[in-house]
Image (cartoon, rainbow, N blue to C red; front, side, top):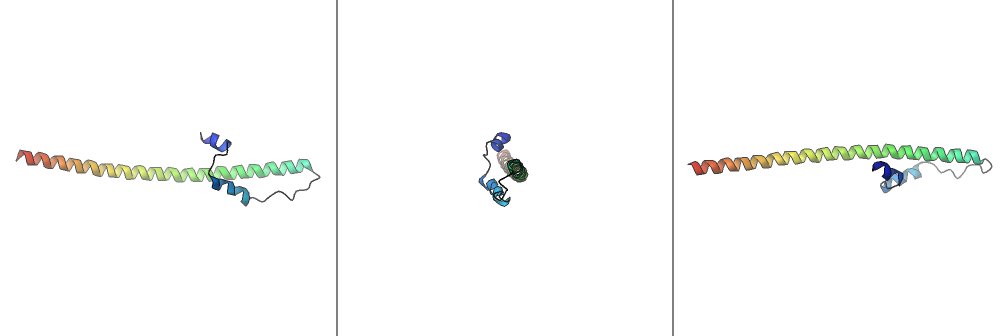
Length: 97
């Protein structure tokens, strides 16, 4: 799924800003087509590699957030179980007296 999103360019919009950071190639000599193609390909590869690094960075952040939310959920669940357990104990004690 992730590979498809990368291939189809369905990445977040801020990833497109990378192309602005990497200098334009409009100043290339017009008389050497092979060199122009080579430089364009290198620029494209640099941009793609930078996008991969950004994507890994963002995925790591999301994974950390998911783990934090999972831990928060577990803590709240334990509190809730404890609350129910205490209420049940109190109800049992009240009925036996």
